[in-house]
Amino acid sequence: MTTRLDQQQANARREIRCIENRIRPGSARAAGGRGGESFEAACDAVDALKRRLGPSSYRWTYCDAAGDPVGLIVRWDRPEGKTIRPIYRGSDGRWRIGGMPRPRPLYELPALLARPDETVYVAEGEKAATAAEWLGLLGTTSPHGSNGAAMADWRPLAGRDVVLLPDNDPAGRRYAETVASILLRLEPAARVRIVELPGLGPGGDLFDWFNAGDSVAERQSTLAALVEAAAVCRVPAGANSPVPAGANACSPLRAANGGVATSEPILQCFADVPPSLVRWLWPGRIAMGRLTLLVGRPGEGKSFLTTDLAARVSTGRPWPDGSEGVEGSVIFICAEDDPSDTLRPRLDAHGADVRRTHLLSMVRKTTSEGRSYDVAFTLSDIGPLERSLQMHPDCRLVVVDPIGSYLGSGTDAYRDSDVRLLLDPVARLAEQYGPAVLLVAHRRKNAAVAHADDLALGSRAFTGVARSVWHLTRDAKCRDRRLLLPGKNNLAAEGRGLAFTIAGETPAVCWQTDPVDLTATEALAAETANTENPRDRPARDEAQSWLADLLADGPVPTTTIRQEADAAGLAWRTIQRARIALSVEAIRGNGRNAWLWQLPDK
Image (cartoon, rainbow, N blue to C red; front, side, top):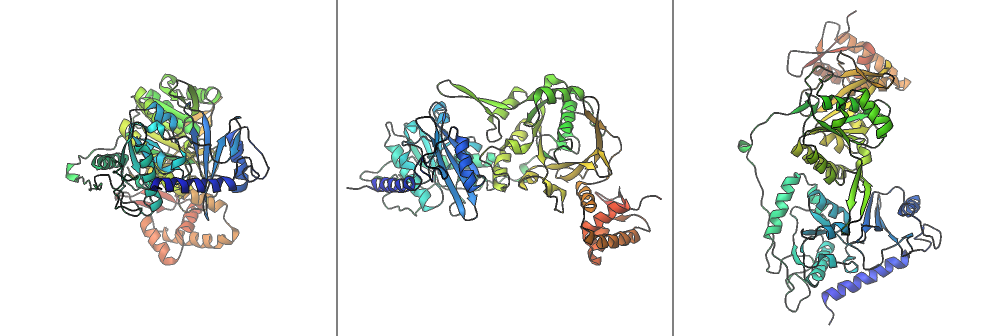
């Protein structure tokens, strides 16, 4: 008699055979157009696919028990839908395009073997399995989608506690049922719980649930409660599925005792929340325990600036505006500058205490067999950063320069959900251990934006997660002069800008004492004015005349100017250009956060 599991496995085998017939390893289609082609390295196979499909969106690596890469899953997110291509390493050590030989290893197999006492969380797909890691859990999946469960080697989960987190669709539920059936028949059988995540939309998964808005701690607490409430599955007599005989593929998954995991809101009354003050590394500019974003073009001096900041923290020297410094260690995560011929000389030139400055660039991984290998550090694995902070509890500043080099291969820098998924654990880490985290970001080449904070390269989530944003640009009137100008600031009133030059035999930052009464958005307007289309000049000339008349009798609040400009049909961006052309000064008024514009003294 054919059981449900037998039918599922047969269907999966037929689908896999169809796929392999269409993309047979070594065939002309698999090799990107040349028959029998194999590749010396996995990246060469990826490049062959990229020539046909363009830059990939995600890439996940599968390893064998020794920790050696044996397969790669590459994904493209395209307008017509997602495209996934597998790559595998053959017995001859060369790489080919096609599915891995069966039985296929589980995702993160070395971690599963190295942590035998931990509960394993199984999701459908590598992206969802990675979300388990952000929750501090041991996550895995089987390769090749919801129909690939029967082709994987699940024996590493024998006798272990396993939680299945199905996607919110029929295919996700079938995948969970198939995996549960396999795990319950291992020797010894795994202890399996099936937990449906609350609040998921159609097709939603653990990745979507994690990214729904709650903090990591809240998500951990909710998931722990769901797992605690779920009963251990068993295979009922005469059945082949871990769910009751009356359940179908579209019904809620149930444990063997018929219980359904429920969810309850966790409310926190603000009367129970003690108020606290923001702790500052640089008062009003860079907060402790928070993320700060520094945006600028390449070559503007961002790395010189971060070196000066690090030197001040390592020695406790005052800040350039005279405010009191904070002394502690500094951790650099820097990809673009050599530590020996660039970073160390710069630190010396800025007077840093190099005994308190450290560089995190590589991570040493060890397999269960004791083999070690080094890989580049990325924020997709922040465990080494946490251990670095534990090793240096006096750390007051972490510099990530540039942030784009540390996102990891599976992160799309232009997708809000991906960026927030990556940066939220970093923000929680900063909050837990207390250092200020300064993220350095390159600026977009296209400056056709109205607000300076939109210049940060990549998703707007970078500026959204950061609590303050600072911009570094050259002075339009003096190229040797750099301007550090304020963008958004969620923790303090809008600050004033500062200026510096870079000089010396071993170049170093030389701060200027006078503040700069200019915001980053106003500086952007000045740049645009210098490169504006000649057809826009009549509008700017009209705005200059209008603004000069408005300010002729004395200072006027900026709120009033904006209202008057709207009434006159003048764009605020054009008014900002006119302000730069007239050298209009910004002065602080008597009211809270009130600013006024006035014509310069003649």
